[in-house]
Amino acid sequence: MKAETKRLGLIVNPVAGLGGAVALKGSDGEAVQAAALAKGAVPRAGEKAARALAALREGLGGVEVLAFCGKMGDPSARVVGEPADPSSGLDTRRAAVALRDAGAALLLVVGGDGTVRDVLAAVGDAVPILGVPAGVKMQSAVFATSPRHAGEVAAAFLAGDRRARLMAREVMDIDEAALRAGRLGARLHGFAMVPVVDGLVQNPKAGQGPGEAAALAGLCRAIAAEMVPGRLYVLGPGTTKQQVLEALGLAGTLLGVDAVLDGKLVGRDLDATALEALVETRPATLVVSVMGGHGCLFGRGNQQIAPSVIARVGRENIQVVASLAKLAALGTAGLFVDTGDPAVDAMLEGFIRVRTGPATTVMMRVRG
Image (cartoon, rainbow, N blue to C red; front, side, top):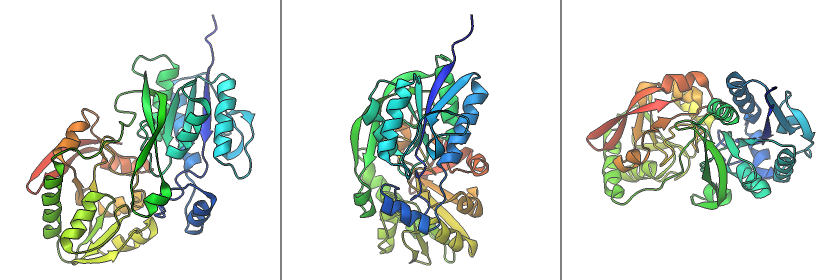
């Protein structure tokens, strides 16, 4: 008997992630997208879709890919509809419905939280969803840890592999206008059915647990006190960075990337281009925190720290900071990176030292 052809629905948000590297903290809205392009942003969603599909086809033959035409799909896909030009969230919803009606067994959604939110609003739990990370924020627990891993999970699910367990996962999204004003707050929009393979799909986002604040404050004071004269310190987004700056008597940005040299703020809310220029001229250290629950170091909310910056600074000059409680919450998943550059991801793989207190460290494995 001839095996049944598996149908995969592909939805690509062509503007996903535009605002990340240029420090716009999102890509929602035509004005933000135009500003991102004016600052030199390069669309990457199509490349990430191609990497996911390549991994899918390596793991499973005979898959029929269905999609809208143009930048919302892939040249190899069978066309089931056409988006407007330019496309919008309405087209994402239309595509989700068309792909469901065409018999797709899984929707592979290339974008960020807003894209997945649109898909969920259109089809609910009628068809499983798997996110290919291409946005800026990606708080939702529906995303694979990298485009390649998305393809591997999709192949396992469509092949009936028992490792791919269908689970209800949170779809979250952030108010980008509030985010740009320095206020971070994610809202739950519902639950999607997601094929999950342990270690290949990111965990739900987790907040700071009780008792962590004092340990974090002591560690941040230690980091500030240890800064070496003449060395540039690039501080990633989040409350850890904010407390380091406060210990130095400086005011930076909570959710941007800032830089300190000789006790002075020499860069505030930097984009990838400005960071590249800074690290090119002097020795530098990257200080980044672990995203709670996810365990992501690079590629979720800190895309301003581009692969070229990471490569220039070097793995040995990266300081990772996290509380013990936050690391324990990761379970066996550990840490992961999704920089967009496979060579840099490979450079970061392996064990890395994580500072959990002024004089305490833990070794954690990093996956690409």
